[in-house]
Amino acid sequence: MRKLVYIFIFAISFMFNNVLIAQDQNLKKALKKLDKGDFVDAELLFNEILIKNTNDAIANFGMASIYYNSQYINFNYFKSYKYIVTSYRNINSIVGNNIIDNKEVEIIKEKINSLRKEIDDDIFKYIKDRKDLSLYYRFINECNDSKHIIEVKNLRNREEYIIAKKNNSIEGYNKFINTFVDAIEIDSAKKIRN
Image 1 (cartoon, rainbow, N blue to C red):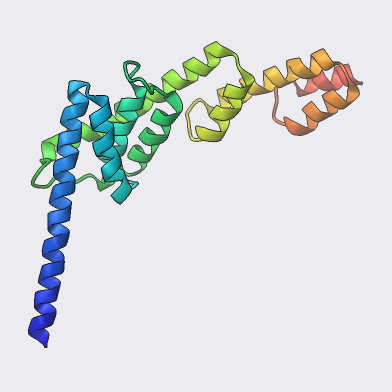
Image 2: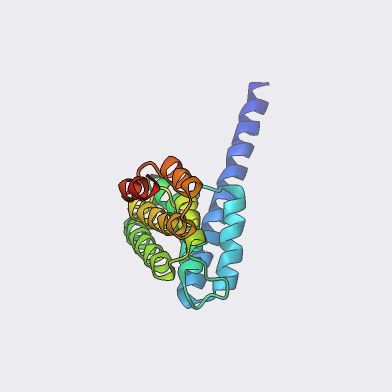
C-alpha cells in the first residue's frame, strides 16, 4: 500500500513539474515575442500563463509592456498600470529555474521597477494634459496606489470647484464642500456661498 502511495506522489510531482516547465517555456517564448514586437502572439502566451496564475509577476510585466507600447493596436495606459502593479506586488515570487537563470531574474526585477515608475509618470501626465474630469475619477479609482494620487485628487477637486462656481448656487457649493472636504478650495467655496 505504501508503495502505491509513493508511486502516486511521485506521479503527481512529476506531472506538476512538467506543467511548471511547460509554463516556463511559454514564458520564455512570450518574452521573445515581446522583444521582437510581436505583441499579439506575446499577449496570447502571457494570457495562457495568467489563466493558470493571475499573479505571475513576469506574465503581468509582459502584459504591462504590451499595453504600454504605443505601437500596439490596443495601447491602454490603465491596463498597463493594472498589470504592472500586479507584477510589482508579486516581484519577490520570481525565482531562477531551468528556463530563467538568476541573472535574468534580477534583470526582470529591475525592468519591473523601472516600468512601474515610467507608467505611473506617463499615465499621470496623460490625464493631467487632458484636463478631463472623468479621467481624474478613473485614475483615482484604478490607480489609487499611484505616487500621483494626491495631485490627481487636487486636479479633480479644482475641476469640481469650477463646476460649483459656474452653477453658482448654495446647493452646488454645499455639495462641493460636503463631498470634497480635503479640497484646497473649501474656504473659497464657503466664502462665496455665505
